[in-house]
Image 1: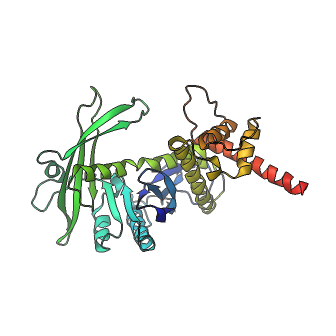
Image 2: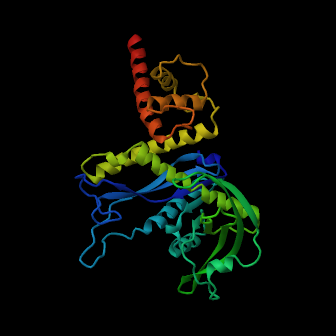
Image 3: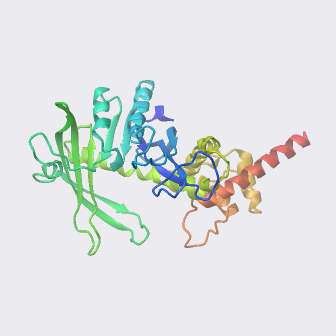
Length: 365
């Protein structure tokens, strides 16, 4: 799938899984020392159009308890960002016609990561959200330096509704400047600093401002807008985590040890990818042939579970809605499109129906 794309965005982020109250061995503290759980840090491949392609890599670990000095044992957790880039660098030669782009949020704003990428000659582009207003070699601060002069241009996009916030149109002015960042021991990392600053935000709403760092050169408004669009695709990994937790309900697993949980998560991450893929394609390409995504028995099972006669060439969105209805989706006028939870619940029933149909066919033979 990746080889068919000219650019693939490789999204990285970390989520915590809360197994508090369970007796599984090997779990560790989370944000609070009294909590028990573990962390998952996948690399999630998507196209520039945000079509999910799959899981490339994953770190899973539990934190050690703090010692009497307040320190934790084990390797530094920040290594996961650097190792994630290195795994992509190893993959890049196998995809000579595809440019990989490492995309991450503010936690990845680390000079050791950027220096390592530069040391490897950047076989994979990197794009991270800046967290630090660093001091440049000329003693200027990074962010004011990047926004000196007139903006390159402007972008406009629709921001979806969120809890406590309505959907709205966002307009941002764009700046970009090539900079050198101090990497210690007389070394520098060359990067482009991008600033996207909202203007005209509604009264009482905090304007959206993004500050990004990348190895790529961007000198025009179109090039900067493309990079911002790639960064905005990072939301897809948040969707993956939502499917994993709220759809697959992995925090309800009761498997006794962290090793068993890790093996289960390896499978559930693939399941979560498939569900996220179906949700995305069902909304963006609703009229595609459902047979491209489901086998005939799954489609037949979806119809039968809804007590409907199977149709010969159903559209993808039609079958997805049938599956979600089997999982509890009501499909009322104001309900919108099915989400991950009802799709996952319905898929389990549809798979059971498909296996039953196959078994009956074999018995008939």
